[in-house]
Image (cartoon, rainbow over all chains, first blue to last red; front, side, top):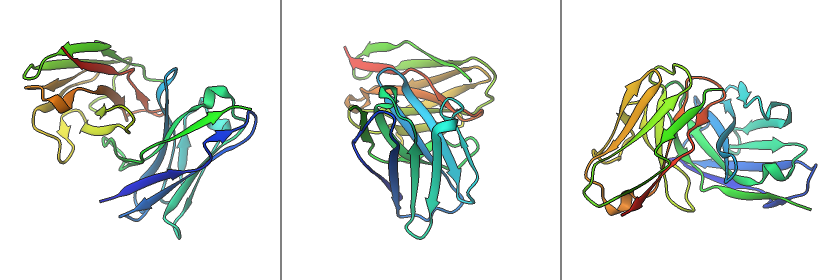
Amino acid sequence: QVRLQESGPGLVKPSETLSLTCSVSGASLRNIYWTWLRQSPGRGLEWIAFMYSTGSTDSNPSLKSRVTMSLDTSKNQFSLQLTSVTAADTAVYYCARWEGGRHGFDSWGQGTLVTVSS
Amino acid sequence: DVQLTQSPSSLSASVGDRVTITCRASQNINIFLNWYQQKPGKAPDLLIFGTPTSQGGVPSRFSGSGSGTDFTLTIDSLQPEDFATYFCQQSHYVPFTFGQGTRLDIK
């Protein structure tokens, strides 16, 4: 059974870069779209970006200029960087797995709260 | 972006009731519609994908239907563990989008 676990700082200062890592156990990174999402009271659930195991990626146009994803197959991890954060980026961040097509996000990490504040 | 509008936003029901939650898309998304259940402090759990297909391990009392722009999640014979918030999500167009959620409370 695949398990995902987010890690990273819980507090980030405005204008700095949010960096999170998702560790995957129970499965390889192959042939899957690895995904980041977030949830906040004001914005609800929001899809941020995905990266396929080959490295192709896509992201939400509302965040595209600030988002970078990467995969580390040697560590079975993938990562998110979100630059120039503001208070509006305060949210619970989730990593998740998507097989593509008509599938949903079928495995999620437990989520990690990131607060943007000075 | 595809806007997903769920109704109702909240719902009170009793154990044993049958409840229906609807999700309307702002444009045709074929059958690329998924449903999730979320309990407080937890990540969403996938219930239904591709409109009618149940995720493995999901009880048969959960079912999904619809196509195009109008979709429905039905829960037959509510159980105590079903009281939660439910979200629809489309995976047809990037950016993937979610409904605002339907909170299901015990009456």
